[in-house]
Length: 115
Image 1 (cartoon, helix red, strand yellow):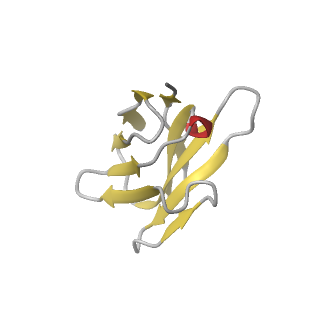
Image 2: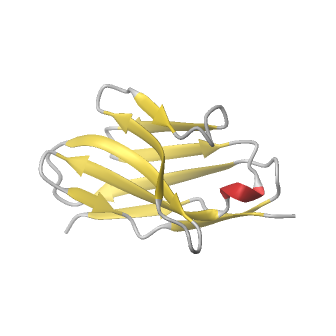
């Protein structure tokens, strides 16, 4: 019933930018936390950024200064603006929302940073 759909992934050259979006649909009473994770082959899925209901943000050290997370509560959408992308940023990016009772994952969107 609850669905998260990511979009905005694709191929970008090093130094380029992408903006990922994740829109939530379905019956959701309250979204407490919205997050972005990423996972590349053979690696553990790791938190990239988090934004709380009060707007407080948290970033992984590897992306701090290059990535900005934001949310539009009316649209129930979380965004990840990525700048100065590096090959190491290549991964499948997943969004996750945390409600008062459940956690939901999107299916992921692939970001490839390569020349």
